[in-house]
Image (cartoon, rainbow, N blue to C red; front, side, top):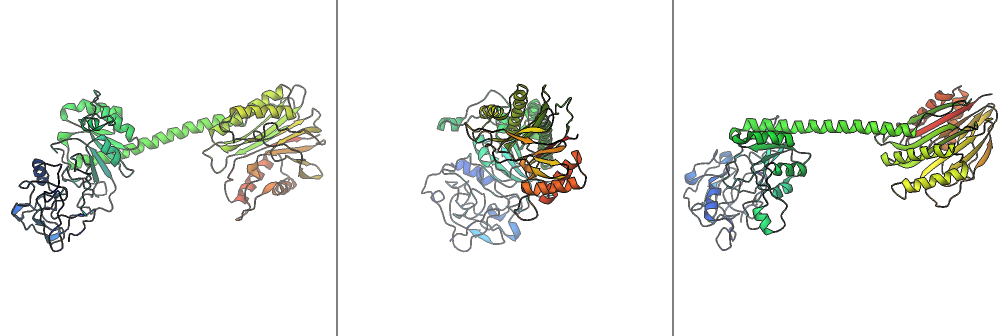
Length: 554
């Protein structure tokens, strides 16, 4: 009974008895490999295989094993078949024991013995185009999947994918080591279809033979066999770069085609190598250089993208948080904006304050649901529309109904909505009209009275929720001296301590009362309020916070 051959190791000796044969090995079934191909495969054995007469090939038996059967009757060169699982008559064991087995073909792994649990990975029929994942010096026909040095490399850091289509197998890769002295894992693909299958996340670098015929995605058996040749000498490279945009690519060319190698670098390869000058030290260094250069390029690209995103966010933020137009007004203005925990995504908080020709002061604050450039851009549109409509003389329900139409036409999704609070202050500063569209009510502080919220019982829904909604305008008395604070929900939705309790409007009112009692006002009051809300939350607030303050003194 054959011993199963685990992956990532040299082929072990069979434990007593003959190695089982397969239909290909014993000649009862068809084989896709002819005798010549079998001879060539047998000639390119791994380090764990012994030659006829017991002499080891490429280093001899592993770990004290010995080559025993030197009669030659089991090699594919003298046999009639090179089936995938055919074992040689006898050979060296991997762990010090000799292995003997029956069969007329050499195993695909070039090793001794035969087993159904072998390390091969051929597709049905044993096509010579099967992909290979081999150690240095391994045969290109072997579709094995083991790391260098007979799989003893659990700490392998780098993986190289070789894409080449050389039927003579002249490309022999030496043993490759990374900077830490660990072996570099090698995979081989004979065409772009196999390369796409083997291009997994653990591949760090691609070695591409520029002599590989250009192939388009196969549409039938004939296309698969022949491929479609592209007159562009770098067509295959361009295809690989599209296929693997995050992987380092090395171009391999002949010494007479050095100019093509230089063109490959200009197209996008990290470097090029000459086939005639290829050795282990040069290739190992080139792989490490290509991988690090690709990482540096990716980091630089991410940095550039971050800078562009920051510039775009800054432009959007200026649109969301403009300079107030209060020329000629006795009111004092202060504002604070602080991004939430997801500071990479600009929120949809926005505000504005203007003075119209009749002397009235109009102030607004709003919040588009969600985060990101689309929400921020929608907030800018709503703010600009509010300013234009305000200067046109609209206010109250008429203004909010028009803003809802703007939102419905400009939003990217029907589920997007916006909350809004508008206050229009009379020219004498003693009265105001208040409209709420799903937004928290402003806070007013007056001398000799505790800070409190303005009435909010008859507010309307958020913009974009109900097609024919109405937003009543409520008249409120402000008095001679007052401070009016408008804010977004990010200020009141922060947590208190370790539990799930929120600060809420009541907690915010108590906090502002303490700050005012301590003598704070204007910018200092807003800064202290936002800081305390953040401290109570135990860190950055989840949502963005926008808060503004209008002061009037007699």
